[in-house]
Image 1 (cartoon, rainbow, N blue to C red):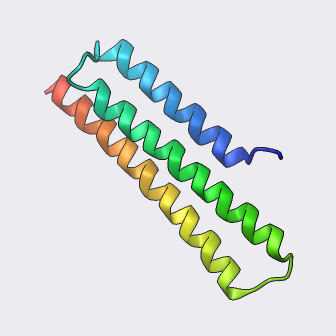
Image 2 (cartoon, helix red, strand yellow):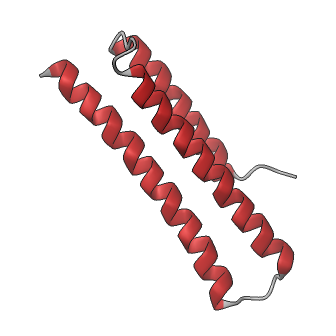
Length: 98
């Protein structure tokens, strides 16, 4: 089974944000758990989204409104996980700079 490029990009982005946070903020036990938690949530949601897409594509290659709806909801979940990750990172940055 091949990995989706969106999943690869988001996991890579999450890893870089966690590493950058450790370097920039000297993120000890105060900030690092929240950033790592947001990265892990993004990875989890991305895995679920990939599973939804694989099942929809496996069931039928025909276009169906419910298939599109399922894929759209999976993509929306990834968007909100990314939004949470960036919000968490911005809050940590704001706290460290201000």
